Amino acid sequence: MRTKYYKLNAANPDPAVLAEAAALLRQGGLVAFPTETVYGLGANGLDAQAVTGIFAAKGRPSDNPLILHVDSADKLSALAAAIPSSAQALIDKYWPGPLTVVVARQPIVPDAVTGGLNTVAVRLPDSFIARELIRLAGVPIAAPSANTSGRPSPTTAAAVLSDLDGKIDAIIDAGRCKIGVESTVVDCTTPVPTLLRPGGVTYEMLLSVLGEIEVDPALAGSAAVPKSPGMKYIHYAPAAPMFLVEAEPQQTASVLRREVAQAVAAGKTVGAVVSAELAATLPRRVIAAVYGSRADTGVIAANLYTALRSFDDRVVDVIYAEGIAEQGLGLAVMNRLRKAAGYRIIRE
Ligand code: TXA
Ligand code: MG
Image 1 (spheres, protein in one colour):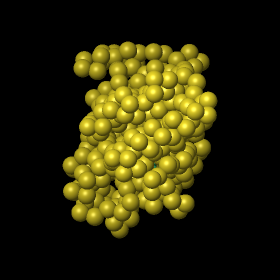
Image 2 (image 1 turned 30 degrees about the vertical axis):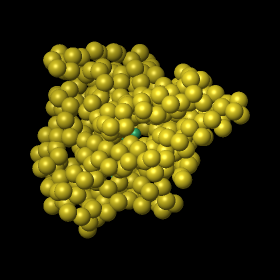
Image 3 (image 1 turned 180 degrees about the vertical axis):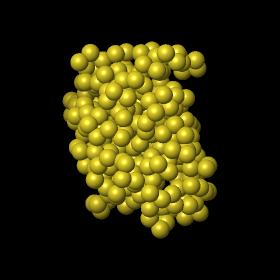
């Protein structure tokens, strides 16, 4: 199939283009669209057949459930069998925004969306284009990140097209996504809400509303069975094997330099996913993808997937990534880096 390409001005999007894309969604088509986190691959979330198309285009395992995106908070009650007080409190504070709540589902939500679970994940994005598209479609939109399963999530239309061109009906290009890592996923069906995936709404922000929150053991990389089916797959991975250096802040740079030097000495072509500060101290022949300054975690999150994807067309034998502190967005960044590294972690 030919993928239709729509270019939109994020500040002043053309309503006719949004209406055309919304019509494609209503007809059962697949449309990639920007959100404030990453690009999503949308389909009518109440149409099991359309949703099945998402899994086929991405090569996604069918037991990994999707998030339903709504255009206003009052749409949640049509999808949720009950809205726990924890979910309501989080929604009041952080919607629209990079927060997904998991709640008991209504029968109207197809099994294709939930992977057969009796819960459903719902999010109200902050992106105006995303909300307008959903509003015009008139249905909740199921949308995973718009990448081939296992690849880094896309934060630009070019990244979407490099994975999905010819496999989807259309893409809306409105430039780079602001946050750069996916939404925070919180299971609100447990007595104490459980953080399933760290994201744009930080752990500290959740705690300030909830007072108490459990963290899914899978986030620590343990062998426990993850509650969020998506957590069990290797994700976000570049083509070459990657090692993540997680040392004390003062030691990370020297440990990474040592590992790089050994690999270079062994004749390897070495890549590095690092801060600007560390990049400046690496041997010239190392191919560095700089994710930003250590001083600004928001910028690191925004650049992370582009840095990982930069090794798609630069052949390296091995990649070393610099870990950062797990405060604020750092928790989400480290979660994605650990998965991208397939949990090959160098700790000292
Ligand atoms: O920021 C985002 O959330 C992006 C944009 C497009 O909105 N979407 C996204 O979707 O990251 P996806 O499919 O790549 O990740 C959804 C995550 C997966 O880890 C999945 O397992 C989890 O949410 N999830 C979905 N439904 C769930 C449920 N009922 N219970 C537990 N986890 C669920
Ligand atoms: Mg994804």
